[in-house]
Image (cartoon, rainbow, N blue to C red):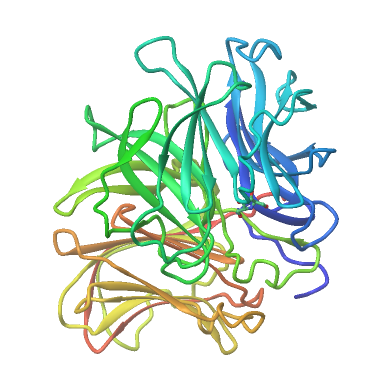
Length: 480
Ligand code: DQQ
């Protein structure tokens, strides 16, 4: 890595040093707040603080001073934020309240801090912690809190993780919490510690039917190796969540290796459910190439539910605001791609968007894209029509020897829809994110290519492929 470490063009990174989980995502008075796990003195994980940034369009982020510092109750682990419109906690009308885990030598409890000036300055609640862990319980963390309207007057709901389960609590005032339910452990338990839950309601297709979604970070044992995010679909009665997943099915949000600890925004002003995750993996998070900063966030994704022949599934689409980044555009339609040709001849880039609609025949053995190609390196996105699988291959993507688990390829099942495949791909300095078939399947990987690995190709292997349409946009560099 050069001394001056390059930045992604449009993915969020800390101004300096270490970040991991997104925390406290809340919208207030025109600003999207993004807090995050932060070690301000080192590029490796350490005593956790909450860093802070704000944004009006989910694209142009502004760094703000650190919001929460460690104190006598411990360091500040992950959590969420709400706006207490009705002053239920008596901190002040419309206080922004952060609900987070205090970690004191491995003992974890939940605490509060509040801000009366749109998140610029913070005070810890004097009665912290508000929810100590039961005796001897080690893992008890990452509270996600939201307001539940329900039939009566409404109340606060908290879900948090406790080892291999999720615990639910309710409260009238954010201070007094009553246990209200539990999910887990589940049958297929050969997976790591659960972390960073989120819980929210979505329409199935365009409604009126709804389901609740519970997302959970699993520290180890995800499909791409190491950490990953699973989800449950079910019902929530205001106190507890009941899963409708079949017992043996684990559903995963993303089939790449780098989408972890995601959280969604509370109070999103357009009633969208927008989520972003940390683009790393506890297998190698502390080892990735870095000199001055380490860690980045995924693109924000809008979530919805769709019912298909195999049941209800989460759908994730890049938010439309990302179109603000679009620069030079190339469009193709009705092209035949034959082995050895490259539609992108003369075009190169390190930060771009591809949206392709490709007819899936049985002629070619495979087709796809090579991106960030340079001297001896490339990252490939390959579709196999026979196996109906998509693979994101970063085995030769650039630096990878920093951890044995990094140089790997990641595969997901992906059937064509009406005979076609849609690949919506975002590439940046250190990442590839694939939203396939209009967000039905996603794969997100970090990569560490040379800065000048600009090569780009659309290829077919063993036969012809028909391209219906392809849009390519260079994506503009945002100030960091
Ligand atoms: N990271 C935080 C914890 C959380 C874990 C500590 C997930 O609160 O469980 O930095 O990455």
